[in-house]
Amino acid sequence: MDKGLYTAMTGAKHVLLQHAGTAHNLANATTIGFKEMVHKFRAVEVQPSQSAFSSRAFVVDASVKDNFEEGPLVYTGNNLDLAIQGKGWFAIRDRSGTEAYSRAGSFFVDENGVLKSKTTGTAVIGDAGDDIIIPPEIAVFIGDDGTISAMQTTGDLNQANVIGRLKLVNPPEGQLTRGGDGLFRGGTGELDDTVRVVSGVLETSNVNVSDAMVQIISLSRQFELQTQMMQTIDEDAQTADKLLSLN
Image (cartoon, rainbow, N blue to C red; front, side, top):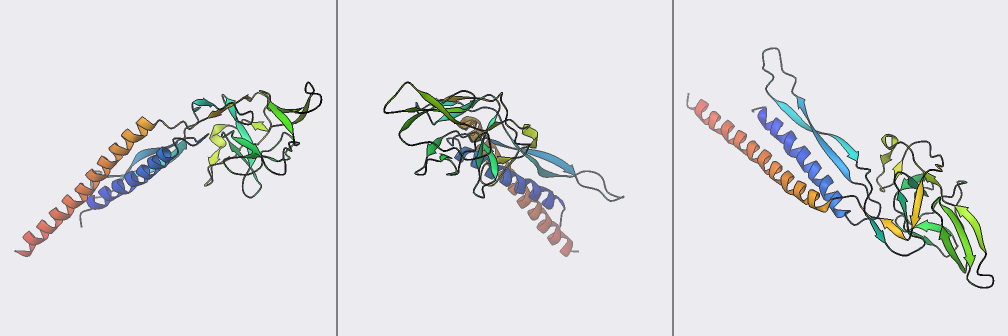
């Protein structure tokens, strides 16, 4: 069987994987804080034998990187909706209770007064590494450094008390890895005083829908080309077998 069939097969396989990744990005085009996944192809030369020529190369989906560019901001007017300005991450707990990072700043207070992420349903981590507890019947305000202040809705309305501070981190992007839950992990996880947030807005996905749609179409055509190539190689092999059988 012609080895070109395997060469075309690798191309079709990895085009299909990249197509799935692009579709995943497109499905999360409206997900708060989502970061685009970028797939890169690489040609890997087939190691020839001593009597063969170097004439073929396999295609490999060599790397899947994350695009950490900021997404557009949308105004909500909710004091518990936050967006990070520039670089940085919110520290939240994952399902196992371990610290992880997210750019999704859509928070809420549960029935126990714990500040949680709407995206994961888990607790937001404070600067001391503990959960943030919001007292009942108060108005909450969050400063640009993540400081959480509370003002009573009854009695002395002019007195604000600091009740906690968000843990804002900024680990090197090269050390971050995306988990299956969409959260990022890596780096030292130290509090970074330079990270700033803005209240009343949310950062949306940084996926460009138009670019993703164009890429989906392009990948579909590449996959069709690879399958046509496999079909042609197979037909050529069958024709060669018939000619040889006549001798």
